[in-house]
Image 1 (cartoon, rainbow over the protein chains, first blue to last red):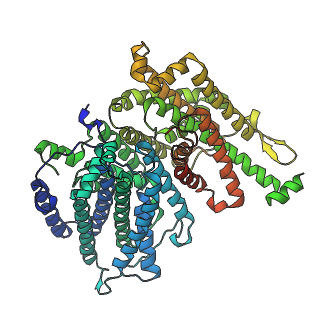
Image 2: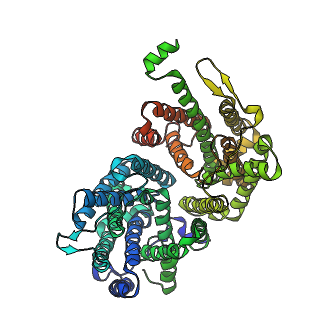
Image 3: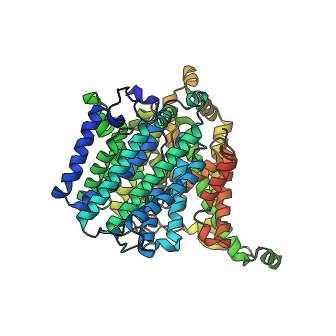
Length: 329
Length: 298
């Protein structure tokens, strides 16, 4: 049994000299590889598949900001992802918002929702926090089943991708791909700027020992709330972009199963690692693609991965690699 | 009298009482499930996310006993909790027991994964449309209470679950075994030092909590159709119930369960659109005013 993980839901971070923009050398190498992969990727793989992957990678990175760096397990992140998708889809379709404005609208609503829910949920900690966020997300789900603008069981269909800034037509998959890749990279870099900022250091202090952070004079609830809003907003961005990519926003994205999936992605990749969530997202999305015709067995396999990772593999893929190479990734 | 009631409530009395009864039945399930969660949480310090799947398994085992072995409802009421409880014991020994030294969140994630596996497996075998389970002959029919017709089975569910909750309370509060259990909840290491086999007690407690969920599943089988998803949506509501009640007191969780069931039923009468969300809204209000829950200790 790995005893070092008793302190929090993830291994403690190793102290290391900060390089360019707060990234360590290993992280910089990985970042360069990532950017290169983003550029050549669509010439080797189906762009729509890559776009789906990037949306989930951003979603998982946003979720990881909470679990990995503040130690808060939000089991209801689908509420922000799905709501971002609905709002972006609805505004793009009904009001003719350009894609960037539609995504900002979706992110704003998800952020406000995160503000309210975070304000309620941070009153409790640990397991209770997880149960409360799950229950609040289920409330959003039932709201979306009934609300007139979501289209109920049918969802919002035929959402136009529109013209970026009113100029560039995003209809072709390749143009859409560059938009999605840019949004992903911006969100991803932003999350890790936050983590490496003084504010991020306080978040980590709260994760390691909240009473101590309080005794040092930090209003920990305020710090947690801001992190929650940030995470919800970025999840909303990911959901909004996804609804534009596929032209559809449905109940699937607000369902609790989606909340479970993002937890799984982050867990598989490695909680509290910079690159883990996107690797986990890639693994799970690819798996779903290949196993799509297997129906409910996908659920069984996902459950099995949960069990295997929790029992034997708690560092996750990237966490294990980083551990082997003795670097931070 | 009834006309007077209709005037002040503004709805036909049969409708009102019908929904209150339905609320009591849902409340019975909330109470039994949150009781099981609380008992498990007390000793194991994990939230058993598999609880919904185990509730569903109870209903399925009842259906299997009837279809494959011809064993009816009354047998199912005894056998299904034992069988599902035994699978719980295996799960605890093989998997959950490996996590006690880690952060409690891992227990939540593990049991969530196990729940997914069980639900997916049953969906593969039986589809998601649901299987019928008939009300036993002894409990079919309805009583005419004057102001409404009361199906016998529904009355039975409410009374039987109350008895089960009361029995659980008696076992925990008034027996030697319950005293050990409460002591181990406070300080497991100390109880072990007195020579009590705490690991075995933990295993059996988990089994008992799971059996309680399965028993609720058997009770639910004739009311709802037996289907693989019957537990998952229910368990999320039960989480909210647990947050509202707090897990400190057993009678508290029973009271909260039934109370919220009735409130949900009344909401169906007066504001049907809000009935699916009312419990979550109450949870938010309780968190804002009494964060530890109505019966919880901070």
